[in-house]
Length: 147
Image (tube, rainbow, N blue to C red):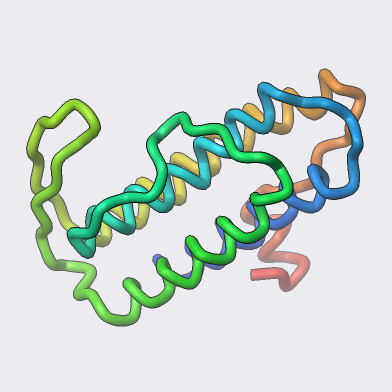
């Protein structure tokens, strides 16, 4: 199920990126929130493999970089999913320096849930900008055979 949720998040993120690519409207808040989605995916995966991160949580990226960062994230996510035992407990430090331990599978579920939450915010921001947001509901993407 986690593999399918990862594919779902990847597909839904790609739909958001397509809207950014197709629109010339300035949407700084939506870009900020989607940058955060990409950053969080990156940060959590780097925590799993005990590597330093390239981004911080609320770093804002130019929308032209979204596709590249998205691709890098999901290549890393898939690699980690294949190579790391999902039941393995890892120790990590959050941005405040607090230390925690949790299962890799819980991190994957968190990353998908976190991304879904913020895509909902982005959909609202798209609507405010007069843009029809893409459908990113899990069940609809599943029904359409996209995941």
